[in-house]
Image (spheres, rainbow, N blue to C red):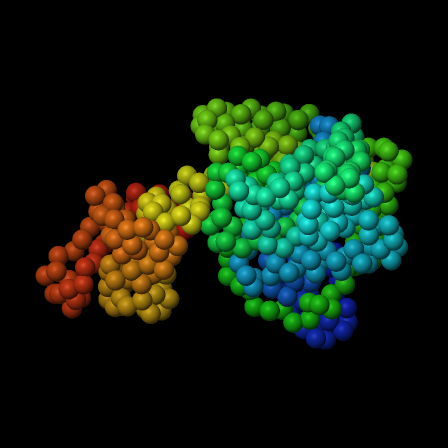
Length: 489
């Protein structure tokens, strides 16, 4: 299941004369040619990228998918479901996640000047209570909520000790995801405090566009978050790359008149459909339908091969998420007569497979949770650390003590591993102590003949040291391990 990317696509952001004078770095020809999907999804992503001080395509794309899903969610259906999505963007602090709120706000401000009711699509920026969210949606039944650091709230909601307040929010989010279709209703809820009672909602469409920090999110991630059903509902975009240099003048970029007009046309259409109680069902070509049929069978086979709760939970909604994503792209290309083609089907299924496999690998490798004593996670930490030692230039690891000669020869010391790993949560939280935990992980690699210990005489003769040191003895096995954790492609 692969997707042939389209030719580089030029987005719709424009640079004012003032911005051009402030910085040449923000010319559209230099920063807005990306392999985004065609149509509005790609154009909105390109605009958000153009206003990002530290441009990251993954962040811009996640923002575009979230915003447009929120607008289209109730007016368009695919296979009986609305197009609302739960989108989570994982990226380190300081790399540019602020572009999500900045870019979407600037674009929607321009749209509201022509279509004031477009403001109704923007939901609350914090989920305070289930009753509050339901009442909001009783007035505005199709919204996108942009939420910061959502990983913490997901963990709290999935906890077996979650209070009634958090459990209530989780239940609402679980139900709302699949209630946006034309014939669906979210039933009324009666609370002990009658003032909080809610009414029945017809086809409520809730889209979540959230962000979190990868390390913090994966440290909190556990099987409960999958088994609760909330995590599998999310599309999870991730950026683990370097922090980009700041691009001065990006705050001066404004959406082009063409992009604003097309967004106005889409929002007006969605508002009109919603007011009249109508829904536009998004069809697909026969070839696209066959792709989704195959994808459904393939995901079912994946669930049947490994009957674990995590595997079943993560693949369970992959088919629906892919269809929704394909439909959002198709509507973005032609909101009056959308049609899912082979390109949209391939793109959506490929994207969901990549995201799902990445999350599954985290569980399979034990690279989730902060519980000390997780030996599989400890082992993978050591493997990654050694892999970085082998692949990084000497200047990047010189502060950890190895000599340049040892590094050039592929020889690493136990002291190097200690300096890198003893403060990592997987080791520092081990009941046996971090030093003993590290020795245990090293012994596991030695016993598996993945690394070998060098003799003291050899170390003294070649490297003028007697510190306990090792080299990789089974490169192929080691490379395979590194591929699984994404260090080697």
